[in-house]
Length: 440
Ligand code: GLV
Ligand code: MN
Ligand code: MN
Image 1 (tube, rainbow, N blue to C red):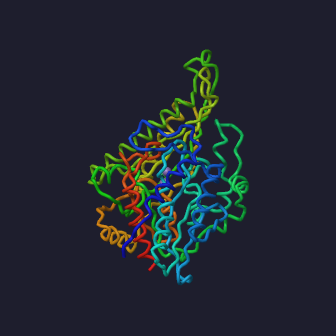
Image 2: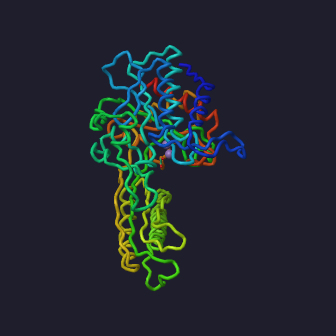
Image 3: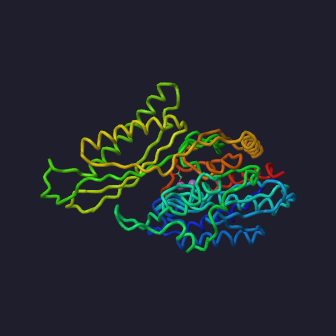
């Protein structure tokens, strides 16, 4: 079968979507390629604009559109045998603050383009093919990543999800809590019970997500495509540190219980333990790069230059392909936290946001991807996904795999994130071929 993609349409749509941004900065003309700084946070008016636009594109192409109670959006091309489980693809269109224009969007618009191109070429699938746009893959607003896919996969219960708070409303620790997810999604028009979101096990016969690599390996090795064999297990935690505040001039140094100094020690301990875990793994003959840990937010109260911080909140993101190794880092961190508490007379409380399992790709879908790469004469390698993806949670209800395209310098979650038109088109073509094979 000859698979051809409407490259112009796909690239134009990626560009149109990138313009639906809340980012104050406009196009960065200092870069060699056009890039757009994108901020598109779930259920903001920009996100709603992007959703409406996507649904219109799907309807125009003759696909059915369904939205569930959390706003996951299914674009469905019915198969000749509707009794069979569908073949799913897709990703997310939400974007963290000041992000790029390719993370997630390539998988959503690539999925739609794959379906459209196959349809226009006269292909009739036996199984339905669906492109899914997940709600809030990014944790920006509700503090937890992959919100929509966690609910689809049944790893987050409805009541816990609905009680999640809008974190954007909190400017500092102790500020009044934001609205709940239940309130925010209702305002956005998604009113049903979240308990209806979980998918039945047979809903998808196969699931495959197209995404930019977000790392440097494909580009560095000059390989066109990455076939993902497993996704590293993410976990995240919120730490609240309570010390004692006061006047920055008058509160004497021996009397201090500075919550931010305690947080600084905790942050450096995180880095130290992750490095130690990697060094040990390397000594044992492993890759020695699989443990990654980041503290990416710090909120300081009262946040004044002349006031000693009394109250700090930080968030830790830690991932590993090996959950035991990740747990080991956490154990060391817990011991260090106890030591910081007693040394500095502060209290530190830990709240687990998520502590997930890794996922493994299905051999049948991996084989279909490899076959599609060979048919397109594309070079490929198998690889680990160190970023998390909605596919990690789709793995709870479906056999999954992922397909990566390279991105410039491995950069992602930045405005200069970039994949070439050729890379995007090739990825989409291989996706289309894989969907066609899986859908029969
Ligand atoms: C996804 O955005 C991730 O942080 O891996
Ligand atoms: Mn992302
Ligand atoms: Mn993504």
